Image 1 (cartoon, rainbow, N blue to C red):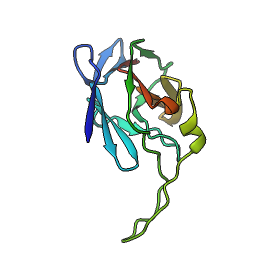
Image 2 (tube, rainbow, N blue to C red):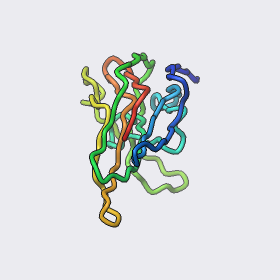
Image 3 (cartoon, one colour):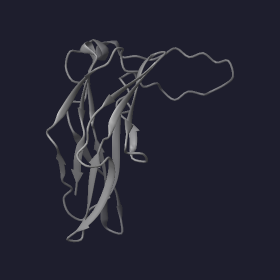
Image 4 (cartoon, one colour):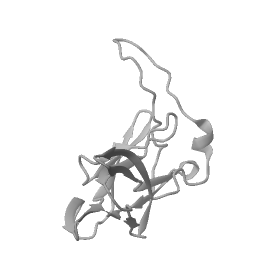
Length: 168
């Protein structure tokens, strides 16, 4: 069963990169979120940001999609988030992140799930972005910017979707 949750965007979907005053500006616009109902729960997919998508990887927690950008920055990195949020009800729990395992023919692995997180009434991530300095190349810092367009209230099986971000 495939359920599509449409999240309208302002003008276009995707990641556009422009230059202004010697700085790169990334405009990230999520087109929609697709909810795939599968064995083991709902799998979420962001549409419109191919090549920039990933997942919040905390073993046993719900697998929430994220957008990741690597930014060169001699100055401060700024992230602006459009305050518009959409609420989406999901019919099943979001699939839990599983640990890496050796894959062999016929192997059966128990699924890992953080029961306390799935009973939680609060929002799981409860933030819009993270900025982390991860490297320096020729003295110029490199930042990993993680955008959280989807947050999840596990007990209510409810998603909050943010669709527009600007990183500069």
